[in-house]
Length: 73
Image (cartoon, rainbow, N blue to C red):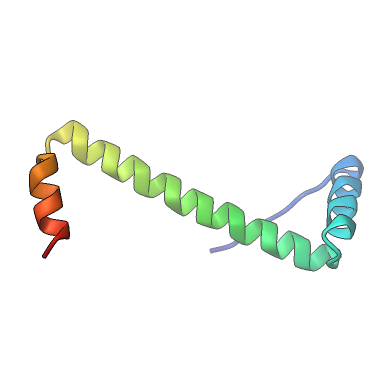
């Protein structure tokens, strides 16, 4: 996966201030922010896949009692 980041001067200044507030270097802050964005994108993609499965009827519904029975194994 390749990530390209382009910042204008205002965005770069904001990132610099945020990095200073978090007491980390700008590169560390950008790295952490990029990793967070990647995890969020992965999670949103997982939600999209689940939504598609539900819409297509490709799921198994259980009652609350069945769920409790599964958890009490």
